[in-house]
Length: 96
Image (cartoon, rainbow, N blue to C red; front, top):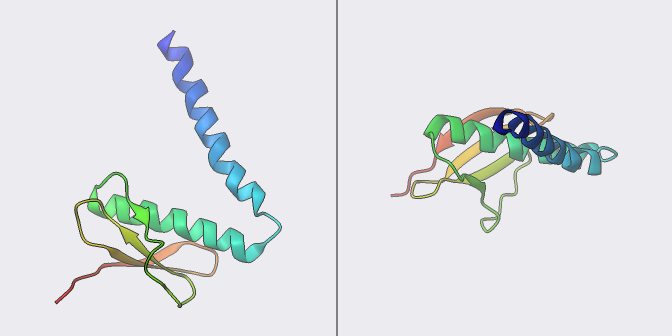
């Protein structure tokens, strides 16, 4: 039974992940922004090994293709994407 449910659950999550891109498919800027956020979350999560990384929505970012990613219990990271939304540079933000 468990072998049958696992693929079904995975397909459901993949379907949900694709829905947000479908919702903005007619808006290239919104699509690039969505892909940029996803790409930055994946890049920072992979680099830090942390689960639960999230885009910081409280700190204003005025540059295009730039995001701040919060790591639970850790420092924030800066992420820069290319115009298509692929993360091309990440850097841990240090204070002091």
